[in-house]
Length: 140
Image (tube, rainbow, N blue to C red; front, side, top):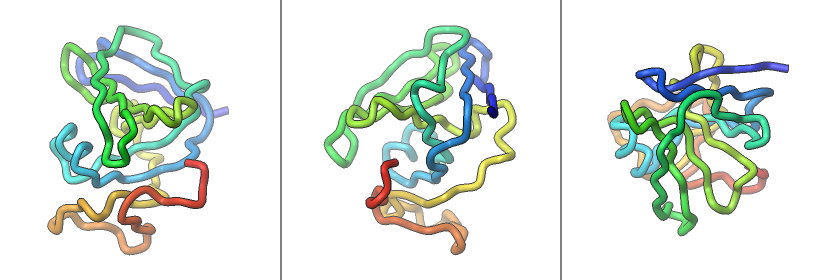
């Protein structure tokens, strides 16, 4: 079983994630853009049962997503690094920010989501499926 570790910029918060991601994505929603300061966020959805904080106590910020669901954004209270998100309707899944893994080089996106909010100057690989909002038909 694959074990991946990661954490924040200052090292105050560390986590571990076991197993393979259920879904790998690049999110172009305005909330992710604002939180990250980037045109999109690379993230993976992993089972909450396989994800754990091993050092530190991250802070939480809860807001309403475009869908109307509560989304909890988890970050380091010291350096501000965004670490992961959890959506109220899917407490069984954690959306980990890929670049917080110690080695994010394995990441390959399955989809670009919320492409309706994508910045026109942000290049999207045409080989990666693009969805205006969140894709339906799968249990992401």
